Image (cartoon, rainbow, N blue to C red; front, side):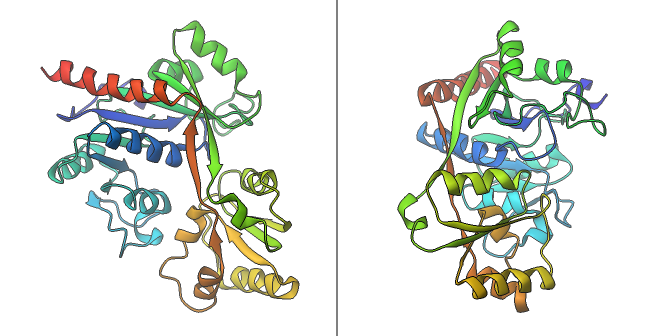
Length: 308
């Protein structure tokens, strides 16, 4: 199995990996961004490493947040590139070398948990507290990407995001093997701005219902919801229907940052949808930010010792 292979490349800077045990959304991208902000506060220059899933480019290449589109580099790398230098590529080692040329002093690997090609100094496994690991079975019978015991051995800590008890058995299993759990939540930005006008919310992410629930949680006037599959590419007909529904009900079109960025570079009715829709921004906040800060610092110190 690929996870058992030894790493092919150890960069001369710390590598922090952010991944998850299952397919679908678990909050990896906002977690990676939160860790980058911690690293920056510690005086480091973070850079992101991503596969570019959903884009046409195989890489390795740097992402240009101003000119690239999701069709070319994927939606998540565009969000990351707005925060810090971001490289994509199927060859993670080659992409890491490009980041090093741009002067990064810590690499944050987004969705690289099952990829063994790059040596990692700390690996965080993100877990959705409301979903856990589903039925606990591997693809295609369940959502697990690889056997859980193997994945758990590769994780240095869990980051359990949101409310719910579906992750509790996993937290106990991690604790038995001495792995800590960090609690975190996705928090909306500018809460009061979303309470004024009735909303039509739409989303094509791993769990659209989580997005809709986040709007309800802040008492936003959510009138209608439309869900699509993860990484969905909207077509002209869908754009037309969403715009027509909004016009008929005098509704505000609201979506996720990831969905809106997939409409970058669109034309025609898709451009109309992009211009009318508003992104609902969220940030990940750790329940214990000091513990998160210490884990990043320990990864940096461990990398320094390992290279010394």
